[in-house]
Image (tube, rainbow, N blue to C red; front, side):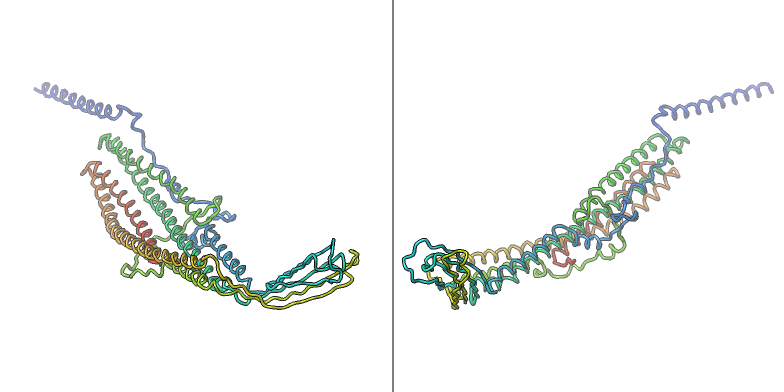
Length: 487
């Protein structure tokens, strides 16, 4: 009986060892089917080096230069070519006005004739100096007949007393300067808006890089955990592969974001007029942006605050002065003149400057247009038709401003509402990922749930950042539409 017991015991031990060996062989075989396809996961690259680019400073000091949004705008207002061209145009307008108004000052001209008489019909005539009614000296070749050589220098001074063209130039001069200044204002407003949006685009990309850096680090840790769990026989191969796929997708997005930051910086530098060969970094405070994101949407639109509306008004004022000029173009032109001449005469050319015969005259000259072929009447009609065009331009501008305002207001409201919802989504997505990841580690849920939670977290974070900067951009559009952008 005892021998039978020990015999059965040895059989049971043998069967147990055989079963354990088979199980170990099966597990080992399942884990080493294709060892090259399951590499040991390594820690992902240090994504901190792939985030916000650290450029050398534009100054030759070896330190980094950081510019805030306000500093970028101030730099652009000083160095942007379009702004500097508009400032030069203001000086050109002022110089043009000075040229047009120079007719109010006395006009002084010097002239002279050197005459050699070939034949004279009257030997008793002496050198004379004639003056026309317009105040212009006329020296005739026959002015001297007693001497064969004559030299008659003279000075003519004229002073405008009344001239419709000068009156028009005087009244329109400040309007032309105002027009150039309003063009400069329009250029600056556009520049502030463009630089701000470009600055926000850079910030959006940098924030996305930060989010993707965190996701890459988190997914790298998940990949290593999945690998060790797979090697321990806790999970199958698909969890590890899914973790690898998710990590690779995120790394690809991170690389794309890092590549996109270069042309975005280039676009910002172009708008600023920043030297292309030099670099700078942006300095920003997200909390400060969040504090200034709110905008009063109950204010009424005021067309007069828009620079385009001011430009139309200036054009209408200039057109009114043009109509007024053509209406009074029939008035005479009156000026005073003074002529002084010296007549030098001698038969011998080397001795011509020995004797002088002075003469002078003073007087008034005027010119009255009698008939101009109806050009004045037609110019008045044309100028008034151009006034009507400006009236229709103003009507169209008001309609365009209102459409721009309503569109910007709707975008701001919808983006602001979307931002609040997506902010809640980020909070819930982070909480969901934390819970699902913890459940997966405890073996409660499959890894597919972790992938879904991770994808929702990344999507919600990126969507929140997009919504944030969409609100900031739509705020700029709304301020521009309402004429509130300052510089």
